[in-house]
Amino acid sequence: MNWYVEVLKKYAVFAGRARRKEYWMFTLFNLIIGFAIGFVQGMMGIGGGSYLAWPALVYTLAVLIPGIAVSVRRLHDTNRSGWWLFIACVPFIGAVALLWFMVQEGMPGDNRYGPNPKSPVGPQTYQDQPRVATPVGR
Image (cartoon, rainbow, N blue to C red; front, side, top):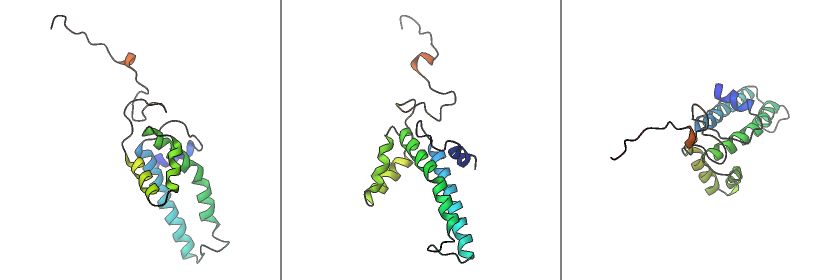
């Protein structure tokens, strides 16, 4: 649940990178909440075309921008521009390609979109690495 809340706290943050776990946990919780809302509405006899189906609409609109933002940050983690999100508009092939991008391992180390989110201490550069003395003449 913490991953879900963290994405909501970054409501419209499109900069930076998002780990696979952050993206997929947000997606999982969206599915669970969506099914729960649909189940409750179904039990109440509220159909999709009914004007009483507002809870699903409100929830969808509430998580639309955070969902796009975490998707863009996930693409940034694979060193791709957020504009690649529009590949999903290509029927079938686009959705498969986007799914492939989302399941790929993030780029190790820093990239042009920021530090590695898996890094425990933030960005690391060559200057931050410890110097090791090498024996002379070997």
